[in-house]
Image (cartoon, rainbow, N blue to C red; front, side, top):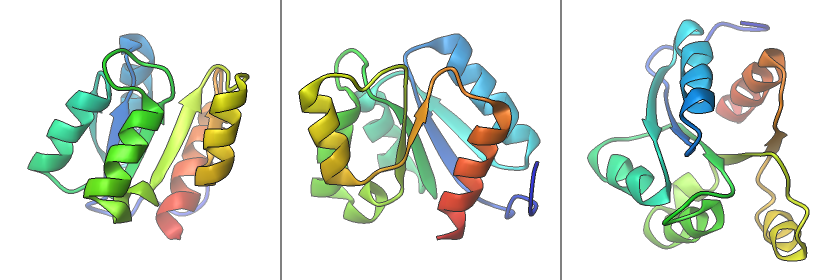
Length: 129
């Protein structure tokens, strides 16, 4: 891991319907010392959140059933403190609606494909806030 070591006990929820990418992110973050869970969409993420506490959520924008913006809105309503600890991982945010959503939230964005170091820096920076 670049920079400081991962704080012990930090939990991250990876929300992505692309299983290979979610597994890769989990492997990287677990190797850095984080406890990581995976949810395949926003609905599954909400179920995880009901069962446990998370320090950070990394979510895809486009997923079936409940997408990233839908998850964010539910977090604003149910767990506003978590809505401030979400970052989006996406291949594209090119639609006007998506651009407006991201601008409104101010949430950090990591564009796919990303470098391992970029993922590590994003996570480290967000957990230090």
